[in-house]
Length: 412
Ligand code: HSE
Image 1: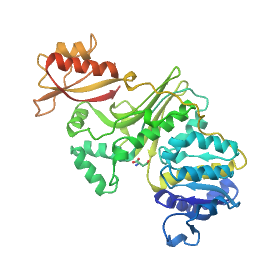
Image 2: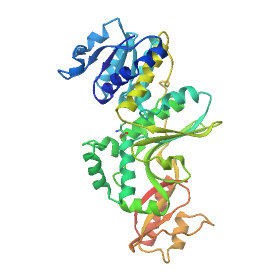
Image 3: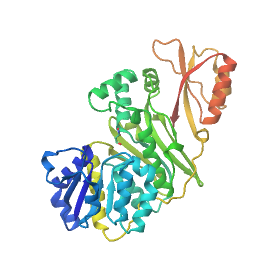
Image 4: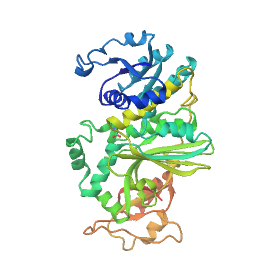
Protein backbone atom coordinates (compact mmCIF):
# COMPACT_ATOMS: atom_id res chain seq x y z
CA UNK A 1 0.00 0.00 0.00
CA UNK A 2 1.42 3.39 -0.99
CA UNK A 3 1.26 6.07 1.66
CA UNK A 4 2.25 9.66 2.33
CA UNK A 5 3.09 11.54 5.51
CA UNK A 6 2.04 15.19 5.83
CA UNK A 7 4.17 16.91 8.49
CA UNK A 8 7.53 15.42 9.39
CA UNK A 9 7.89 16.71 12.94
CA UNK A 10 8.27 14.58 16.06
CA UNK A 11 5.25 12.36 15.41
CA UNK A 12 5.60 12.17 11.61
CA UNK A 13 9.23 11.11 11.86
CA UNK A 14 8.27 8.66 14.62
CA UNK A 15 5.72 7.07 12.28
CA UNK A 16 8.39 6.59 9.58
CA UNK A 17 10.64 5.05 12.26
CA UNK A 18 7.98 2.62 13.53
CA UNK A 19 7.02 1.61 9.97
CA UNK A 20 10.68 0.78 9.31
CA UNK A 21 11.43 -0.82 12.69
CA UNK A 22 8.33 -3.08 12.63
CA UNK A 23 8.24 -3.60 8.85
CA UNK A 24 8.16 -7.42 8.89
CA UNK A 25 5.49 -7.61 11.52
CA UNK A 26 3.34 -5.06 9.67
CA UNK A 27 3.63 -7.04 6.42
CA UNK A 28 2.52 -10.18 8.30
CA UNK A 29 -0.47 -8.39 9.85
CA UNK A 30 -1.58 -6.50 6.73
CA UNK A 31 -0.54 -8.92 4.00
CA UNK A 32 1.46 -6.20 2.24
CA UNK A 33 3.99 -3.50 3.13
CA UNK A 34 3.23 0.16 3.80
CA UNK A 35 5.48 2.05 1.40
CA UNK A 36 6.12 5.74 1.95
CA UNK A 37 5.95 7.46 -1.43
CA UNK A 38 5.88 11.10 -0.27
CA UNK A 39 6.71 13.19 2.76
CA UNK A 40 5.11 16.64 2.62
CA UNK A 41 6.91 19.19 4.79
CA UNK A 42 7.86 22.86 4.78
CA UNK A 43 11.57 22.12 5.23
CA UNK A 44 13.89 22.35 2.23
CA UNK A 45 15.74 19.21 3.20
CA UNK A 46 15.24 16.10 5.31
CA UNK A 47 18.59 14.37 4.68
CA UNK A 48 17.38 10.79 5.17
CA UNK A 49 14.27 11.34 2.98
CA UNK A 50 15.15 13.96 0.37
CA UNK A 51 14.21 11.50 -2.39
CA UNK A 52 10.54 11.57 -1.31
CA UNK A 53 10.31 15.07 0.21
CA UNK A 54 7.72 17.27 -1.52
CA UNK A 55 6.20 20.71 -0.89
CA UNK A 56 3.14 20.49 -3.10
CA UNK A 57 0.05 18.88 -1.54
CA UNK A 58 -1.60 18.33 -4.94
CA UNK A 59 0.97 15.64 -5.76
CA UNK A 60 -0.48 13.52 -2.97
CA UNK A 61 -4.07 14.48 -3.70
CA UNK A 62 -3.82 13.64 -7.39
CA UNK A 63 -1.71 10.50 -7.20
CA UNK A 64 -4.03 7.50 -7.69
CA UNK A 65 -1.41 5.17 -6.20
CA UNK A 66 -1.65 6.88 -2.81
CA UNK A 67 -4.32 5.03 -0.83
CA UNK A 68 -3.44 6.22 2.66
CA UNK A 69 -2.27 9.54 4.11
CA UNK A 70 -0.87 10.16 7.59
CA UNK A 71 -1.58 13.69 8.83
CA UNK A 72 0.84 14.75 11.58
CA UNK A 73 1.00 18.48 10.79
CA UNK A 74 -1.03 19.65 13.78
CA UNK A 75 -3.33 22.69 13.92
CA UNK A 76 -6.66 23.11 12.16
CA UNK A 77 -5.62 24.86 8.93
CA UNK A 78 -4.61 23.64 6.42
CA UNK A 79 -4.84 20.16 7.98
CA UNK A 80 -8.65 20.21 7.79
CA UNK A 81 -8.79 21.28 4.14
CA UNK A 82 -6.16 18.72 3.14
CA UNK A 83 -7.86 15.85 5.00
CA UNK A 84 -11.24 16.79 3.51
CA UNK A 85 -9.86 16.80 -0.04
CA UNK A 86 -8.15 13.44 0.49
CA UNK A 87 -11.28 11.81 1.89
CA UNK A 88 -13.28 13.20 -1.02
CA UNK A 89 -10.85 11.35 -3.29
CA UNK A 90 -11.52 8.15 -1.32
CA UNK A 91 -8.10 8.03 0.35
CA UNK A 92 -7.87 6.78 3.95
CA UNK A 93 -6.53 9.33 6.42
CA UNK A 94 -5.08 8.74 9.88
CA UNK A 95 -4.19 11.62 12.18
CA UNK A 96 -2.71 12.40 15.57
CA UNK A 97 -4.11 15.93 15.42
CA UNK A 98 -6.55 16.47 18.29
CA UNK A 99 -7.31 20.06 17.25
CA UNK A 100 -8.69 19.00 13.88
CA UNK A 101 -10.52 15.97 15.32
CA UNK A 102 -12.14 18.10 18.03
CA UNK A 103 -13.09 20.97 15.73
CA UNK A 104 -14.07 19.12 12.55
CA UNK A 105 -14.25 15.39 13.46
CA UNK A 106 -17.92 14.83 12.65
CA UNK A 107 -17.68 16.44 9.19
CA UNK A 108 -14.58 14.39 8.38
CA UNK A 109 -16.20 11.18 9.60
CA UNK A 110 -19.28 11.88 7.43
CA UNK A 111 -17.11 12.60 4.41
CA UNK A 112 -15.19 9.34 4.95
CA UNK A 113 -18.51 7.49 5.10
CA UNK A 114 -19.76 9.15 1.89
CA UNK A 115 -16.60 8.10 0.05
CA UNK A 116 -16.24 4.61 1.62
CA UNK A 117 -12.82 5.29 3.10
CA UNK A 118 -11.66 5.65 6.70
CA UNK A 119 -10.71 8.49 9.00
CA UNK A 120 -8.92 7.27 12.13
CA UNK A 121 -7.60 9.32 15.03
CA UNK A 122 -6.44 6.92 17.78
CA UNK A 123 -3.34 9.02 18.61
CA UNK A 124 -5.36 12.21 19.21
CA UNK A 125 -6.17 11.18 22.80
CA UNK A 126 -3.86 9.39 25.21
CA UNK A 127 -0.89 9.03 22.80
CA UNK A 128 0.05 5.35 22.84
CA UNK A 129 -2.95 4.33 24.98
CA UNK A 130 -5.61 2.66 22.79
CA UNK A 131 -8.60 4.50 24.20
CA UNK A 132 -10.52 5.39 21.02
CA UNK A 133 -10.59 1.86 19.65
CA UNK A 134 -11.30 0.45 23.12
CA UNK A 135 -14.40 2.64 23.43
CA UNK A 136 -15.52 1.86 19.87
CA UNK A 137 -14.84 -1.89 19.78
CA UNK A 138 -14.35 -3.34 23.20
CA UNK A 139 -17.01 -1.30 24.97
CA UNK A 140 -19.44 -1.24 22.05
CA UNK A 141 -22.05 -3.05 24.12
CA UNK A 142 -21.68 -0.84 27.17
CA UNK A 143 -23.52 2.26 28.26
CA UNK A 144 -20.56 4.35 29.31
CA UNK A 145 -21.49 6.40 32.34
CA UNK A 146 -18.15 8.05 33.08
CA UNK A 147 -14.73 8.63 31.57
CA UNK A 148 -12.26 10.45 33.78
CA UNK A 149 -8.63 10.80 32.81
CA UNK A 150 -5.27 12.30 33.40
CA UNK A 151 -4.86 13.24 29.75
CA UNK A 152 -1.88 15.59 29.76
CA UNK A 153 1.65 14.40 30.51
CA UNK A 154 3.16 17.87 30.95
CA UNK A 155 0.85 18.95 33.76
CA UNK A 156 1.03 15.54 35.41
CA UNK A 157 4.82 15.77 35.39
CA UNK A 158 4.67 19.25 36.98
CA UNK A 159 2.17 18.19 39.68
CA UNK A 160 4.20 15.07 40.46
CA UNK A 161 7.43 17.08 40.74
CA UNK A 162 5.75 19.69 42.96
CA UNK A 163 4.72 16.92 45.31
CA UNK A 164 8.16 15.30 45.33
CA UNK A 165 10.17 18.51 45.79
CA UNK A 166 7.78 20.79 47.69
CA UNK A 167 8.63 23.54 45.17
CA UNK A 168 6.11 26.07 43.82
CA UNK A 169 4.39 26.02 40.45
CA UNK A 170 6.47 28.67 38.65
CA UNK A 171 9.79 27.13 39.69
CA UNK A 172 8.68 23.63 38.72
CA UNK A 173 7.39 24.84 35.34
CA UNK A 174 10.74 26.54 34.62
CA UNK A 175 12.57 23.31 35.50
CA UNK A 176 10.21 21.26 33.28
CA UNK A 177 10.85 23.69 30.39
CA UNK A 178 14.62 23.41 30.89
CA UNK A 179 14.37 19.61 30.74
CA UNK A 180 12.14 19.72 27.63
CA UNK A 181 9.06 18.30 29.39
CA UNK A 182 7.12 21.56 28.94
CA UNK A 183 6.89 23.80 25.88
CA UNK A 184 8.39 27.31 25.94
CA UNK A 185 4.78 28.49 25.45
CA UNK A 186 3.12 26.11 27.92
CA UNK A 187 -0.37 27.63 27.90
CA UNK A 188 -2.18 24.90 25.98
CA UNK A 189 -1.00 22.32 28.52
CA UNK A 190 -1.06 24.20 31.82
CA UNK A 191 -4.25 26.17 31.15
CA UNK A 192 -6.06 22.92 30.39
CA UNK A 193 -6.95 23.43 26.69
CA UNK A 194 -5.08 20.32 25.53
CA UNK A 195 -7.01 18.29 28.14
CA UNK A 196 -10.24 20.02 27.19
CA UNK A 197 -9.92 19.04 23.50
CA UNK A 198 -9.16 15.42 24.46
CA UNK A 199 -12.09 15.43 26.88
CA UNK A 200 -14.41 16.69 24.12
CA UNK A 201 -13.24 13.85 21.84
CA UNK A 202 -13.89 11.31 24.61
CA UNK A 203 -17.35 12.76 25.27
CA UNK A 204 -18.15 12.58 21.55
CA UNK A 205 -16.95 8.96 21.42
CA UNK A 206 -18.92 8.01 24.55
CA UNK A 207 -22.14 9.78 23.52
CA UNK A 208 -21.99 9.06 19.79
CA UNK A 209 -22.74 12.76 19.22
CA UNK A 210 -20.79 15.92 18.75
CA UNK A 211 -19.79 18.45 21.42
CA UNK A 212 -17.64 21.57 21.57
CA UNK A 213 -14.59 21.73 23.79
CA UNK A 214 -15.41 25.43 24.27
CA UNK A 215 -18.53 24.31 26.20
CA UNK A 216 -16.49 22.32 28.72
CA UNK A 217 -15.60 24.22 31.90
CA UNK A 218 -11.80 24.35 31.80
CA UNK A 219 -9.41 25.32 34.55
CA UNK A 220 -5.68 24.63 34.39
CA UNK A 221 -3.03 24.20 37.08
CA UNK A 222 -1.54 27.73 37.27
CA UNK A 223 -3.23 28.37 40.63
CA UNK A 224 -2.11 25.12 42.28
CA UNK A 225 0.43 26.19 44.88
CA UNK A 226 2.97 24.45 47.10
CA UNK A 227 0.53 25.09 50.00
CA UNK A 228 -2.22 23.18 48.15
CA UNK A 229 0.24 20.33 47.62
CA UNK A 230 1.11 20.36 51.34
CA UNK A 231 -2.59 19.95 52.18
CA UNK A 232 -2.86 17.13 49.63
CA UNK A 233 0.04 15.37 51.32
CA UNK A 234 -1.57 15.75 54.77
CA UNK A 235 -4.80 14.28 53.37
CA UNK A 236 -2.96 11.37 51.64
CA UNK A 237 -4.26 12.60 48.30
CA UNK A 238 -2.75 13.65 45.00
CA UNK A 239 -3.72 16.70 42.97
CA UNK A 240 -4.22 15.79 39.31
CA UNK A 241 -5.54 17.70 36.30
CA UNK A 242 -8.58 15.68 35.28
CA UNK A 243 -10.71 15.72 32.17
CA UNK A 244 -14.01 14.13 33.04
CA UNK A 245 -17.29 13.33 31.33
CA UNK A 246 -20.40 11.75 32.81
CA UNK A 247 -23.62 10.63 31.19
CA UNK A 248 -26.70 10.47 33.41
CA UNK A 249 -30.05 9.74 31.75
CA UNK A 250 -29.32 11.61 28.49
CA UNK A 251 -27.68 14.49 30.36
CA UNK A 252 -23.99 15.14 29.87
CA UNK A 253 -21.62 16.59 32.44
CA UNK A 254 -18.01 17.49 31.76
CA UNK A 255 -15.16 19.49 33.25
CA UNK A 256 -11.41 19.98 33.18
CA UNK A 257 -9.90 21.01 36.52
CA UNK A 258 -7.25 20.11 39.08
CA UNK A 259 -8.83 17.71 41.57
CA UNK A 260 -7.72 16.06 44.81
CA UNK A 261 -7.96 12.33 44.30
CA UNK A 262 -7.94 9.70 47.03
CA UNK A 263 -5.59 6.71 47.27
CA UNK A 264 -8.44 4.33 46.46
CA UNK A 265 -8.90 5.92 43.01
CA UNK A 266 -6.90 4.02 40.36
CA UNK A 267 -5.80 7.40 38.95
CA UNK A 268 -3.95 8.15 42.21
CA UNK A 269 -0.90 6.15 41.11
CA UNK A 270 -0.57 7.80 37.68
CA UNK A 271 2.63 9.80 38.15
CA UNK A 272 5.01 11.81 35.97
CA UNK A 273 4.43 12.04 32.23
CA UNK A 274 2.06 9.05 32.24
CA UNK A 275 -1.64 9.24 31.43
CA UNK A 276 -4.44 7.18 32.94
CA UNK A 277 -8.04 6.92 31.80
CA UNK A 278 -10.70 5.46 34.08
CA UNK A 279 -13.76 4.24 32.18
CA UNK A 280 -17.01 3.21 33.84
CA UNK A 281 -19.68 1.19 32.03
CA UNK A 282 -23.10 0.07 33.23
CA UNK A 283 -22.19 -3.65 33.01
CA UNK A 284 -18.42 -3.40 32.84
CA UNK A 285 -17.91 -1.56 36.13
CA UNK A 286 -14.64 0.36 36.32
CA UNK A 287 -11.54 -0.22 34.19
CA UNK A 288 -8.45 1.85 33.70
CA UNK A 289 -6.09 2.31 30.77
CA UNK A 290 -2.58 3.47 31.61
CA UNK A 291 0.51 4.35 29.62
CA UNK A 292 2.49 6.96 27.72
CA UNK A 293 0.09 9.67 26.63
CA UNK A 294 2.67 11.61 24.65
CA UNK A 295 6.13 11.23 23.12
CA UNK A 296 7.43 10.35 19.69
CA UNK A 297 7.30 6.56 19.53
CA UNK A 298 4.30 5.86 21.80
CA UNK A 299 2.19 8.33 19.77
CA UNK A 300 3.61 7.02 16.48
CA UNK A 301 2.74 3.50 17.62
CA UNK A 302 -0.94 4.53 17.90
CA UNK A 303 -0.78 6.13 14.44
CA UNK A 304 0.66 2.89 13.02
CA UNK A 305 -2.15 0.88 14.62
CA UNK A 306 -4.55 3.12 12.65
CA UNK A 307 -2.52 2.57 9.48
CA UNK A 308 -2.88 -1.18 9.92
CA UNK A 309 -6.62 -0.82 10.58
CA UNK A 310 -6.98 1.29 7.41
CA UNK A 311 -5.09 -1.33 5.38
CA UNK A 312 -7.31 -4.08 6.79
CA UNK A 313 -10.51 -2.15 6.05
CA UNK A 314 -9.35 -0.88 2.70
CA UNK A 315 -12.58 -1.33 0.84
CA UNK A 316 -15.19 -0.06 3.27
CA UNK A 317 -15.94 2.65 5.81
CA UNK A 318 -15.58 1.58 9.41
CA UNK A 319 -17.61 4.11 11.35
CA UNK A 320 -15.37 4.91 14.29
CA UNK A 321 -16.54 8.21 15.67
CA UNK A 322 -19.79 10.06 16.16
CA UNK A 323 -22.71 11.74 14.41
CA UNK A 324 -23.10 15.45 13.66
CA UNK A 325 -25.88 15.89 16.22
CA UNK A 326 -24.73 18.39 18.83
CA UNK A 327 -25.18 17.57 22.52
CA UNK A 328 -25.51 20.10 25.29
CA UNK A 329 -23.20 19.95 28.26
CA UNK A 330 -24.78 20.79 31.62
CA UNK A 331 -23.37 23.89 33.37
CA UNK A 332 -20.40 23.43 35.72
CA UNK A 333 -22.65 24.31 38.69
CA UNK A 334 -24.50 21.02 38.28
CA UNK A 335 -21.38 18.92 38.92
CA UNK A 336 -20.91 17.71 42.49
CA UNK A 337 -17.64 17.42 44.43
CA UNK A 338 -16.22 17.54 47.88
CA UNK A 339 -14.05 20.65 48.35
CA UNK A 340 -10.92 21.34 50.34
CA UNK A 341 -11.38 24.89 51.60
CA UNK A 342 -8.44 26.85 52.98
CA UNK A 343 -9.93 29.12 55.64
CA UNK A 344 -8.27 32.22 57.10
CA UNK A 345 -7.18 31.94 60.76
CA UNK A 346 -7.27 29.02 63.15
CA UNK A 347 -10.19 26.57 63.54
CA UNK A 348 -11.07 27.37 67.20
CA UNK A 349 -14.66 28.62 67.43
CA UNK A 350 -15.36 27.95 63.74
CA UNK A 351 -17.03 24.54 63.91
CA UNK A 352 -20.63 25.76 63.99
CA UNK A 353 -20.28 28.14 61.03
CA UNK A 354 -18.42 25.59 58.93
CA UNK A 355 -21.02 22.95 59.70
CA UNK A 356 -23.80 25.33 58.70
CA UNK A 357 -22.37 25.92 55.22
CA UNK A 358 -20.21 22.92 54.35
CA UNK A 359 -20.89 19.81 56.46
CA UNK A 360 -23.90 17.56 56.83
CA UNK A 361 -25.30 16.52 60.20
CA UNK A 362 -23.20 13.75 61.67
CA UNK A 363 -20.06 14.51 59.63
CA UNK A 364 -16.92 14.59 61.69
CA UNK A 365 -15.07 17.83 62.39
CA UNK A 366 -11.53 17.32 61.16
CA UNK A 367 -9.61 20.54 60.55
CA UNK A 368 -6.31 20.09 58.72
CA UNK A 369 -3.37 22.10 60.04
CA UNK A 370 -0.09 22.52 58.20
CA UNK A 371 3.12 22.37 60.23
CA UNK A 372 4.25 25.86 61.18
CA UNK A 373 1.23 27.70 59.71
CA UNK A 374 -1.09 29.60 62.00
CA UNK A 375 -2.70 31.85 59.40
CA UNK A 376 -5.02 29.25 57.86
CA UNK A 377 -6.51 25.78 58.19
CA UNK A 378 -8.17 23.36 55.82
CA UNK A 379 -11.51 21.52 55.90
CA UNK A 380 -12.84 18.91 53.51
CA UNK A 381 -16.50 19.65 52.87
CA UNK A 382 -19.15 17.04 52.24
CA UNK A 383 -20.32 16.44 48.66
CA UNK A 384 -22.06 19.55 47.29
CA UNK A 385 -23.22 20.83 43.92
CA UNK A 386 -20.72 23.33 42.60
CA UNK A 387 -23.38 26.09 42.40
CA UNK A 388 -24.35 25.54 46.07
CA UNK A 389 -20.69 25.53 47.05
CA UNK A 390 -20.06 28.96 45.53
CA UNK A 391 -23.20 30.39 47.11
CA UNK A 392 -22.33 28.97 50.53
CA UNK A 393 -18.73 30.08 50.23
CA UNK A 394 -19.82 33.67 49.66
CA UNK A 395 -22.36 33.60 52.50
CA UNK A 396 -19.80 32.04 54.84
CA UNK A 397 -17.27 34.78 54.11
CA UNK A 398 -19.86 37.52 54.57
CA UNK A 399 -21.18 36.09 57.83
CA UNK A 400 -17.88 35.20 59.50
CA UNK A 401 -15.57 37.82 58.01
CA UNK A 402 -13.11 34.96 57.38
CA UNK A 403 -11.74 34.61 53.88
CA UNK A 404 -11.51 31.31 52.03
CA UNK A 405 -8.07 31.74 50.49
CA UNK A 406 -8.39 28.96 47.99
CA UNK A 407 -10.37 25.80 47.32
CA UNK A 408 -9.73 22.55 45.48
CA UNK A 409 -12.32 20.11 44.23
CA UNK A 410 -11.99 16.55 45.54
CA UNK A 411 -13.29 13.14 44.48
CA UNK A 412 -13.88 10.29 46.92
N1 HSE B 1 1.37 18.29 25.36
C1 HSE B 1 0.69 17.04 25.42
C2 HSE B 1 0.97 16.40 26.78
C3 HSE B 1 1.14 16.15 24.30
O1 HSE B 1 1.76 16.95 27.55
O2 HSE B 1 0.37 15.38 27.12
C4 HSE B 1 0.15 15.12 23.89
O3 HSE B 1 -1.06 15.65 23.43
